[in-house]
Length: 194
Image (cartoon, rainbow, N blue to C red; front, side, top):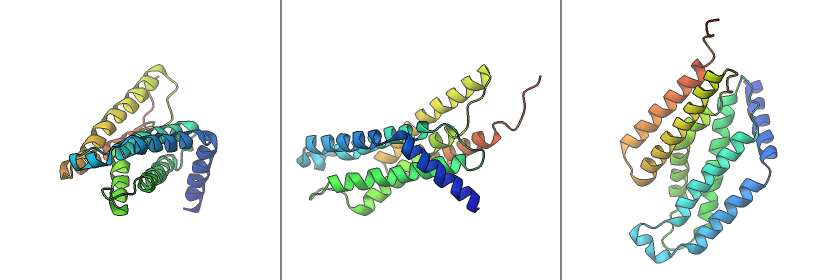
């Protein structure tokens, strides 16, 4: 267990160092720009630019961090991606809380709820990115298509989880998570016929 935790920690630190400060500085600039542009009086009508900017900026930071270090160990690759996603979701939502102080802003508990929704929406994509790409052209194409499909499913889940408080969105997120785990664990189990 300690070996796995150490691998996850080292991989997370390697990703942070490989990505550098650029994604974080761009995220902060993106959120500051959104907070300056947002008319606070329109919040009563459902305009939340900071929250939407946090979701988009958080996704871009997650993609930058997950693609910064592509050498994943066989042990702990999925867990390292999920830990990275969780850390980014907490950091992004708390940063948006710091930038959004006012009479109509969401509280800290609502931001933590947003972080959980962000995590649930993009966890299947993080799991699908944890599998190393196959060497063959058909395996590479299949891996690429699965990652693209997980991005599409994640965007639909993000829309559903962001807009409504329904049980169907959480059920769809759970099914997408189970499908991604199944694909990541079953890949590579069977060798192609020679």
